[in-house]
Image 1: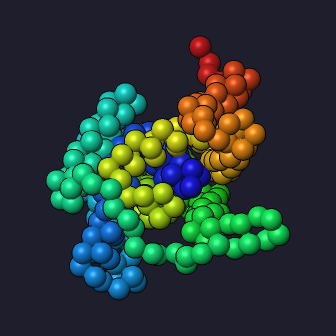
Image 2 (image 1 turned 90 degrees about the vertical axis):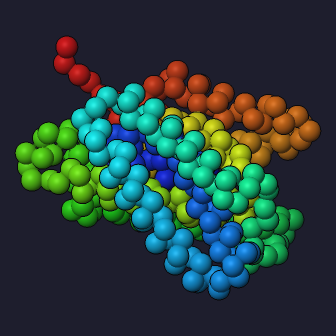
Length: 278
C-alpha cells in the first residue's frame, strides 16, 4: 500500500522534477468518485472502473494544462506550492460533493482470508500487494525500455536540452500527470479497501509516501518498492514485539528509519548521487 502511494508521486517527479504534494487530494477525490459510482449510482464494477479511469485521465490533463504548463522552467518551490494548493482545492471539491464523512468502500477485491499454517492473509491486502508489484514492473519496463519513458527521464534532467534534441516537453508533462492520476485511482481504491474511505486519507497518503520516497530515493522506482516494504515490515514488527498498544512509536518509526538512512546516504538507498561543478 505504501509502495502504491509512493509510485504515484514518484512517476510525476521522475518525469518532470515536480514533487506533487497534492497527490493525496487527487487520490481522495477519485476514491470518493468510484465509491459514488458504485454505492450511490449502483453501476457495475467494470463500468465504474472505466469511468473513473477516464476521469483520472481528464483530471490529469486539466491539472497539467491549466496549472503546471505555465510554470515550465520555474523553480521547484513554485511548483511545490502550486501542487499544495491544487491538492487542497481538489480535496475541498470532494468534501463539497460527497460530504466529509467516512464511507465503506464496496467490495472490489475478494473477501476472506488465505491461511497458510499459522499465518493468515487478508485477500484484500494480498490483492493490493499483487497490484503494487504489477504497477512496479510496468513502471520499471516503461522508464527503462520505451522511447517515451526514456524521454521522460531526459525531460526531468533539463527542459531546454530535451527540447533541443526534439522531445516535446509539454507532451511529456501531460503524459506524466495522466499516468500519475491513474496511479492515484489504483492506490486510492486499495487504500480505501484495506482501511476506510475517509476525508483524511490524503494526509495519511502523503505522510506515508514521503518517508518511503526519501528512504528509497526520489528517482528510483525499485527504491519505492524496497522502501515501502521496509517501512511496512518494520511497523508490523514494532507492533508485535514492542507494544501493540503504543501507536505513537509506530507512527514515528517511518521517519526514524528515514532519518537514519539519510544520515548515511542522503540520496536514499537507490537514489542518484549528484556531483555538480562549482
